[in-house]
Length: 387
Image (tube, rainbow, N blue to C red):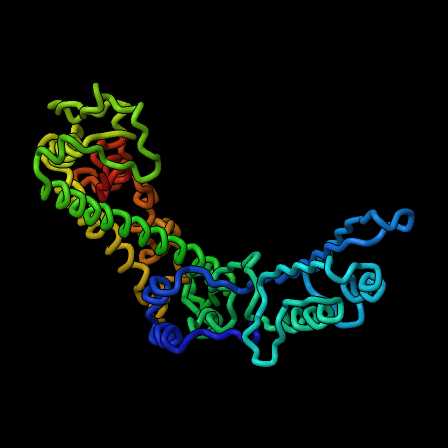
């Protein structure tokens, strides 16, 4: 219910100060507008009755009642059932009632137990279960509705998207006229730019985490003795260790090979010594640099030449309004629409938002990596090492 939801004061302060980028970095490009919850109670009765034909024979009856939401007492499947008749037919010492439920709020001090020993107590348990479903903050989350911030009325007001924005332009007669910037275009631009910022954040974080994982992995491997490294397998992060897949004889790990190229089986099973060699060896795509150097270089190049420049353009003032570029320009604009200041050139290289790309200094753009790097596979599959 958006009528009762609100933006937190800390986030509101960011929007009021024009720190839209900081807002997106902290809150993301979208928000959860609605949450659908479900509560349920299942009851099973098991009892035995005397047969009308033979007094010695007994018949077992099983009745299962279920409700996704309990009805108001006096109506519905639970309450319409003839409890009194069942109580009379069942043998006193043969009645079993089993109640299972989820998504219930039993924190109220006035709540009764869901345990019962008779049909009368069962009706009381139902009333307790019904009351436990009334709290809108309880229940198992079944689905959520996620929408862009641009669709939130409070956000539109704080971010000044609804504010009338005018700009000068030249008409066909060569005269300067004042036009109104369409509000729908502002909402569309903000949505696209916010998604782009979130994607750049993801790529920057991916490259940064690669450095951390690689450093941590190397630190653990370098702290072990050669004897330990050569006699232990490294556990794959996804697949269990299978002894029969070992590529050594008599369960002895294979000796090191002076080759950075992996065997196919080494992608799922590798010795600690071999892993150390690959992470410390020269990568086969750039023989002049070590993997840790490449990882740090790519992180710095991405943030310096693409991420930082794009962020700077997106936060520029436009049409005399603070940080208006975020919703008056689109990150794919190339400045070819006749306005000299309308392009976001640093942002429209969409290749940079892919994980298997890197910033090429010579070409001054992001380049798609043609082959996977062995050391990067090893970090994903085996770091941090567990033996």
